[in-house]
Length: 224
Image 1 (cartoon, one colour):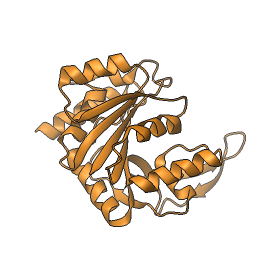
Image 2 (cartoon, rainbow, N blue to C red):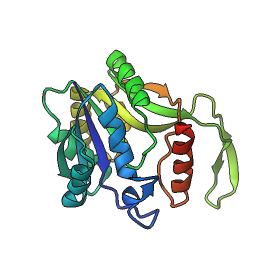
Image 3 (cartoon, one colour):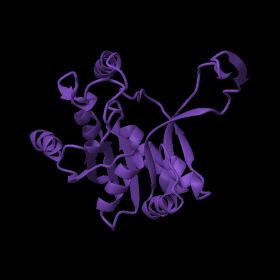
């Protein structure tokens, strides 16, 4: 059994408005993300973590997402929100996927690929090879050196783990007052390995308003 935690509790400070309620085509950003997990055969339940419970529940009811089992309130930090979602996951679930609602281009096929790797290795993450040239900068923002981009990946979501592995990782994070930016970081704190699944499709994160037309273009291309 695979439970999916959709993290929709961010403040959207960088974009300046609530990006999850912006439209891409005829659907909200949030709806696109939920629809992919709704369609993924391996997903048994969806837990949505958010700030406004009623607003999100209205979206779910209107779109009739039948796999959504709970809508829970998020916390101040991402790790607090994921912990809130983890607390709501069915105890019978063997695996848990964590996905950012701001990544609306995720596909059921990519979810299944990551899940397959997680079943084999216990933990897996969708990631994209870094293709840009990377440089270090000094305190004055002048180039001070280069980073070898070979075997460098940008972490994406979903990130999928055996449930108990993620529970233990978050317990470790809490007990040691560690601040993390994603679940891979939490699991790596415990010394466990996480398999990388190279992305085969676009999976951009909506960060700025200009990302919305790009996402819409990609979705239209997929329909052709």
